[in-house]
Length: 266
Image (cartoon, rainbow, N blue to C red; front, side, top):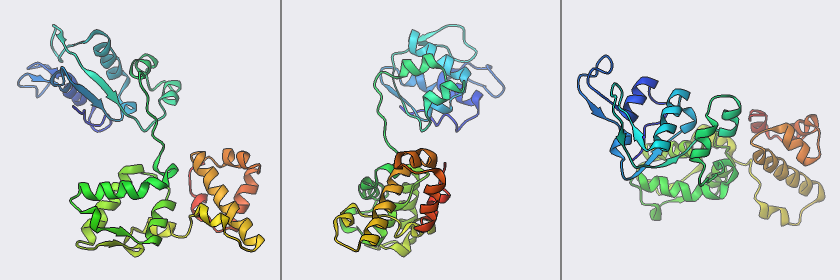
């Protein structure tokens, strides 16, 4: 069972959704209600965006995980539950702990098996496969669809600040505006993606024999973009990895017309 996004509901309502409540527990609670945790007894419970959960609820969730018991709001007796927990977060939970926004004990209770999935901008080779999957989820037949080379280059060069959710929105937008089309063209993509066209450097191009000054520019553009992506947009860190000063990195970015990097974080 999946819980609603931790940031999507007011704290009181979210607590009621998780733990349930007795009649009269709060204004509007006219009858008793079992919560999602209780309904998931004997199964698996998925907590999306756990990093957004308020600290008070983190403590109550930890108690359920430790004691395998819960109490509905307004109820005195505890109910036994047997639930396997899976959680996900786009936030750096170690950083949230340091900032006092996430409990260390809950973090280690959850961290039995950890799977780190890099953001989409770090794995452009996955974009085409994910796009086909997302189109199929919306009812399209991916075997009858293709992506024009320049459109694919733009999709892979884009930084995807909204990660896979943004790619899903792009797929939904394309299906709504181009029903029946069988080729995804560059001019059919949203404005942000069209601006990314021509920014990427195909690694295979680096092996092509060309004039030295042109080859040097191509290699530097490739390494600059790769370093900034690998450092999550932190240009000072990227500059150090490239052996440049921050000012030197900015100078090269402007020289090579990589203006999209000037607006990236860091």
